[in-house]
Length: 318
Image 1 (spheres, one colour):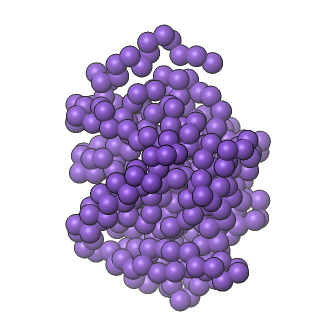
Image 2 (cartoon, helix red, strand yellow; image 1 turned 120 degrees about the vertical axis):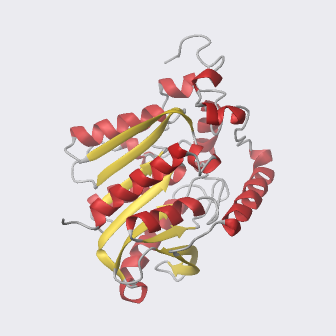
């Protein structure tokens, strides 16, 4: 599958004006550069997290434990203080980058706007910890949330999963496991710019130099996750054949993103299976626009859409 020759020669004119100064900002996932890229991103996101006004949301770092007693770092965001619904959040970072700071702003927004307790997971990263390490971690935390629901003062019958980029893959896999009875039941899945398919798509060929994330980085990402081996189907949400019974979804993505087509395709497959699904493609945006410009009106519109979708799913009734 190929795109038209020169299709990515210059996408600057397609970017929203507010994003055009970021045209050269993209991540390089080459193995020898990962330590430096991690340090740079962690430093910047730590500073932005520390400066964020979290008024109305109680934020606490804690440790969850898996069935063997191994500790997993989490951050708990309480948008309401009593018997709240819970959202397990899987952060972005191409499976190889990020920690609890990388999507701190997004978690604050979700907790505040959805009236929920958001639990963000500091899952293990590839390539040091290839699949299924990260999935094992987020699954363990989902089970821990249910087991500790009284202590956490959350309602285990009102659970959702959410994720951004690579975290969207983990959230989608959790929703699939829940549908199969291999994870606690979830009512909703919120997937933003999600990584869903390791196979070629037109958008991966078209957007090879786009800001935020580009086509070549998608291949590097999957190679890291698989530890240099063939990508296991169990790591790829779109490799599933049957979607009936999977939780309802909101899927949001960017027009100028190599991951766009797999998000649209996944939404269609959910709808064809009878799963209640809302899809929104943000025109003129690139991957990660909500992190690059969180105060931008389009990012604020995204946060409002996500918060309202979670509120409808987790606070049923008039």
